[in-house]
Every structure is written in structure tokens, then in C-alpha cells.
Image (cartoon, rainbow over all chains, first blue to last red; front, top):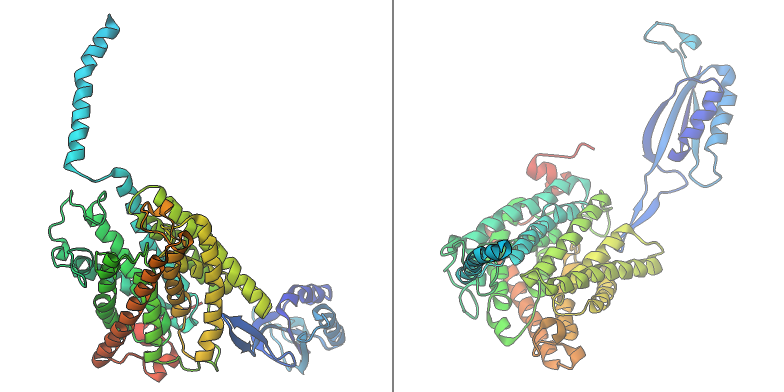
Length: 112
Length: 435
């Protein structure tokens, strides 16, 4: 099992969710986060006072998937979240030791 | 026969009616239409402060100071209203002193149901007192915007009491209550000197004396929620119909002319500020649109009931452009932190607007051949307006400075650095936003 973490542009969330649903991945956790990478934030102007906002809003998507569909998951997220503009985000993959569905106590991939 | 009988029978009744109404007119000078209009105008001007100004100001501060900013408007309303009824009205609007009024109306003394003021002859004097009270409230509340984010609440309360009597009350007496400026012939329809110059200059003095916000010019001090400021602007804008229209003190064409000039000036101000910003900075900001509207409204105020509506367009355009420059360039060059631009919008608007009253006043609207402006070749009125501006500004600087220094003897003007960092809502009021 792998945990796939994607930090994406907020308005791309629905497209990413649809793409993952097509892969039969049912369930994800999302968090509204702020951060910066190469995009470096943006400038806002209020009555001539210019402020650089370095942390810009992103959505962090987390899905845990079976090892065999990790490449397909990554590609689905990448294709759905892609705009070609700076600030599209990043995808990280980390190993998962164990998973359990609390309601039934199932473990491993059958708990996903 | 029947018809003849009916008319004969009815005649004494008609005579009686006529006699009764003639008798009523003799007994009370109070006009129902004027009274009804002025009750509505009074409510509109109170609405400008609560919730208008409270929302407008709170929308422009940071999230941690939002309630503290609203607290200033609420406190100004409560405190100034009581003081106005107690003594403010009497000192500003009664008697024939050149500098200050009398104590004849302290706590409403001598005001009966049929009493009228010589300054407003067709409405109950209690209504005139109430209407003028709403002006005092918003002027004090306006000042707070320049020191938002850092002045302590206790200091604001003490300052409000002192400033009302040191600056607002004398100034109102001079130009509206029959004082020396009025006797000279200075005209101020709805408060270019009394409200806007006073609020703006006091704001500037207070911002300088209290000092800049921590992080001014370095940290991000962006507004938390401009949707509140837009809502507040709407309430101010509509309320201004009562502010300027009501300053006609009656339900007549003068009020209508003032309302139309006021509205056009607000619109022209919004267009001008937005155009300047779009051209200068690349984007037409919503804060720019509402700032321009308020600039137009402030600048038209002293002239509103003396001019043709088209003059409102000119005044609003100038207001939008000049106030834009003052708020976006002048303030940053001089490095004073007038948090919500009380000087840049109201002070500048009041200074120029009071002069404009001496430019665009026309005897067709003033109803007095002697009261007209430069466009009708009357240079004298323009000179008088300049005197009004200089006198009001000078007194306001001195009075505000004194009020701040006296307040500073009683309590610290400014919150402690830790409190400023934490935010005034939690530090001063023990409350916070949970959104």
C-alpha cells in the first residue's frame, strides 16, 4: 500500500476527484492548506499599499491505494491537476505499513 | 330643495373646520411633512454610524481587530448621544454667542412639544436636537478610523468626551449655531467644516500622536473582509441622503436638489477613483470603487444644498482623483499611518469641498441673491470659505492635540506591544472571531 499525497490548485479538486473515481478509488481525504513553491505567492494592493502574500491557498489530497495501481493513480492526478502554469503543485508517494477499517476491523488492502 | 338644505347645513361645519385649522396654525409652527421627513432623515444618519460606519471600518482592518473597530462606533453612539442631550446641543445650537452657545437647553430644558428652534422653524426642537446628535455621533466615530488597530478602548472613550466638547461643539456653533463664521457669511450645508474637516484633521493628528501601527510599511496589513466594507458603504451612501437632504431641514426641493447632487457626486467619485487606479495600478479594485464613492460623498457635503446637480458630477470627479492621490501616494511619501484614511478621504474631501461650496453655489438654489459662488462671479464667498477652512483646521489641530495629551495623562493612548500583536479583540474585549 502507498499513500499518495498531492498538493494541487483548489479549483482542480473536482477534476482530480472524478479521475480517481474512474480508477475505482473510493475515498480520499482533503485539507485546505497554504504554502509556496516556485510560484512564490502573489501581490495584493489596497489603496496603494502593496502586500506580497507568500502563502497561497492549495488543496492537499491524500489517497491510500494498493501498490499495483500507484502508477495509474499518479498519472490520473497529474493529468487532472495539470494546467501548465506555475503553481500546479506536487505529488508525493510514501509507503503505508498497515490500514484498518474501524467499523469491521478489516486490515490491509481490503480495508481501503 | 334637498341639495340646498344640505349645503346650508354644511356651511357652519366648513366654517368651523376652517377656523380650527387656522387656529392650529397659529398655535404651532410645526409642519407635518417637514417633521416626517426629518424623523426619517435622523434615522438615516444614525444608520450611517450603526451599522454603516461600523461595517465599513471593520471590513478594512485585520481579523484580530474587527470587533474592537466596531466597538468604537458603538461606543461613540452611546457616549456622544448622552453628552449631546446633556449639554452638547445647548452649547452648539442655542444663544447668540460668537464662540459658544448657551446653557439654556441643558438636558432638554425648556423644550416642550410645540417648541421650535429659530434655526429650524418648522420641526419640533427635540427633533432638531436629535438630528444634530446623529451628526456629532458619526463625526466622533469617524476619527477612530485613523488610529484603528492600536488605540486603546479606554483612551478612545476619554478622547471622545474631550474632543466632542473641545472641537466638535464649538465648530458646530461657529458655522451652524449662529457663531462668528456664520455671522461672517461662511456657508456649510451639511458639514464640510464641522464633520469632514474636523474628523479628517483630528484623524491625522491622532495618527501622528499615537504613532504608526507595528509593521506599517513592512508587514501585511491587508483588510480581512472587504465584503463588510462594501455593505457598510451601501448603508453610508443611502444614509447620506438623510445627511445632506435632511440638512435642508424640511421636505422641499432644496432637499431633493441636495440628494441628487450628493448621489451624482458619489457616482462620479467611484468612477474617477476606479479609473485612476485601473490606469495607475492595472486593476480596478473593489476597495477603490467604494473609497471613491465615499470621497465623492464627503466632498459634496458642504456644497450639496447650494448647487445644481451637475456641479455634483464635477465635485465627485475631483474628489475621486484627489483623494486617490492622497491615500495612495501622499500618505506613503509622508509615512504617516492613518489606518483607514480618515484624512485622505474625509479631511481632503472636507477641505476642498468647503472651498467648492464657494465655487458652485448658485442663488437659484440658495434662494438668496447674496449667497452664490465663483461661477456667478462672487469672489467674496470663495474667500469666506477659505477663512472657514483655515479657522476650522487650526482649531481642530489645537483641540485634538490637547484632547489627546489630556487623555494621555489619564491612560495610555496605545495598547501594549504584546496586545497589539495579539489583536485588540481578544486583548481589550475578551472576544474573538471563530470563522
